[in-house]
Amino acid sequence: MAGSSRKRRGARIRAYTYTGGRTRSRHPLMVQTLISTTNPADEPPQNLMPESQSIIVLCRETRSVAEISAALRIPLGVTQVLLGDLADRELVYIHPTVTGFSPSSDQVLRRALRGLERLFQ
Image (cartoon, rainbow, N blue to C red):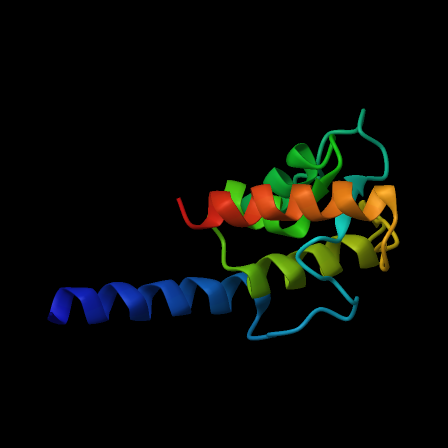
């Protein structure tokens, strides 16, 4: 029991260090919001945290916030904060989120569902 509590506390501490204690992104990011790199040919800047570098590499192909979170095994809130920071530095592009009922919204929802399924595998 004590080991389990210690593991959860360690996970919270790591998440805090990723975001500097911030819990929200300055950008409206939903689980289905699509993200891509602004220049897929560029290598990630070396002065970024490894997690942010991994996000840039993953987003050479457009991915949802949920997919990124699942692939890196980082909590969704932390992923959103890191993505917001990368967007502020113009290293990733946040695609406008589709709302309503259109063929493209079905595609967005399918991608979000796949990302969520990966989170809980």
